[in-house]
Length: 257
Image (cartoon, rainbow, N blue to C red):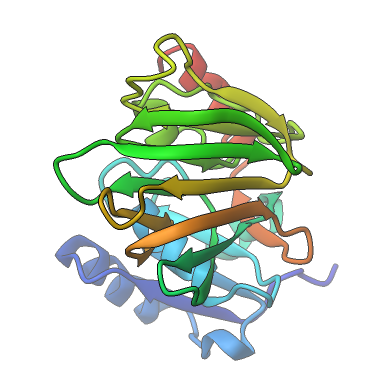
């Protein structure tokens, strides 16, 4: 029976462990350029997985990560043996990124995509003042906080979780809207939104209380307004060993193991 994957591209982080793993795999398996590959094998941690997904965005090329980083939530266990067999039996997880458009205080629009979250942060010692609208309707007239973020299900176990946001099952049609150290409204802890929602956040007093906007690792400073929505035109494909799918990992995270 024909294999799904015949041509592999290897990428690795600069960490010594990842580079050693790369050398070991290159001795055993043929390597092609990423644009010519059927699958990309990424050696490192979750940061490398996100970088690889961003670098191949729009190509719908599957990424199989092997953990040579720290947490490795998105990665599989590293092994040199049976790589083709593991790739053939791997399960697909398909996610869509968030599209962020951020306007700065000069009216210039900046665009970036996020796999985990779109976040806004205060740039100085003063708290940010933000107005939150969903689908054109103002829901919070004035949020006073260190910031706010919009997380995808795939990103809900990352920064979103650390600031008290909910964990979302991967296949849930939801986005998490989570404040960062909210002062007012005093009891607001965030909201769950349908994943087709159009989220707009306006910065109040943008010049006196400057705010930055970040899509994963892409930052724009001194923004006045941010729009975030899910981009269904882009499929991002990750491969995981049977029993270790992203759905399973998110479920385990909710039970603390």
